[in-house]
Image (cartoon, rainbow, N blue to C red; front, top):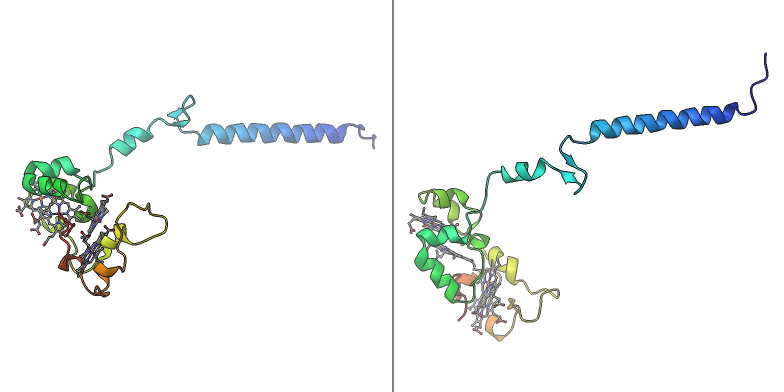
Length: 157
Ligand code: HEC
Ligand code: HEC
Ligand code: HEC
Ligand code: HEC
């Protein structure tokens, strides 16, 4: 048997590296979407796909078209600037067809919606009004509804 070349292990290693590199380039070519944007590093088709998703929110401007009075009332008090749909839920169906009102109804049986925003937490800025068990709230027990005293569209007292 002829003696193997003293460099044969290097040739084998080199061969493996070349096979590995070709494999990597092949997988990369197959896995890169055809619309990949090499300049901005995103998939070119994704903005179109996202824009084509069905809408969930109608937006305050749409509510204003049919509920001008309510809209102006909300804008005059402490909840001005809030999205109507942060309380009424995502109601694009209702905004497109005013008859579908069941969708826009607020859960009036519990306080979770108010507490979602007003729970007293250390992370909230000082100026943000939170539900604190101070004098004004000391008689409010767990099953008393916030709406007993506060109106959602005009929450100040
Ligand atoms: C195409 C017109 C139209 C648009 C746009 C519209 N609504 Fe309405 N909405 C109505 C009509 C009609 C009713 C039923 C009569 C009423 O209560 O004024 C109604 C009723 C409601 C009700 C009362 C449901 C109940 O308890 O009787 C709520 C809450 C409501 N809409 C919220 C919204 C919100 C929030 C938006 C914006 C995302 C919106 N609406 C957009 C027409 C519209
Ligand atoms: C903080 C939560 C909250 C926000 C923000 C809010 N709503 Fe309401 N809304 C309520 C609640 C709760 C009721 C139910 C009142 C009741 O049944 O006594 C209601 C009732 C309504 C109704 C039916 C009765 C009425 O008062 O006219 C309409 C219409 C309505 N909201 C539209 C809107 C629109 C339009 C906006 C945005 C400009 C908005 N709401 C913002 C909580 C909210
Ligand atoms: C989506 C968040 C959100 C929800 C839900 C919400 N609030 Fe508010 N609330 C706010 C914001 C924001 C302010 C204004 C804070 C500011 O002025 O800096 C506010 C202000 C208030 C104030 C002070 C009003 C004033 O005139 O000083 C009260 C009281 C209040 N909310 C009660 C409620 C009650 C009761 C509910 C449930 C029906 C509720 N909020 C639901 C965000 C929310
Ligand atoms: C028994 C009546 C009553 C009930 C029920 C009640 N509140 Fe109040 N709340 C008050 C009064 C009174 C004030 C003080 C009003 C003022 O200073 O304008 C107040 C003030 C607030 C403020 C403003 C605090 C600030 O720092 O300016 C928030 C936020 C608030 N309440 C949230 C809630 C939430 C959320 C609920 C339900 C979990 C609730 N309240 C239930 C009576 C009540």
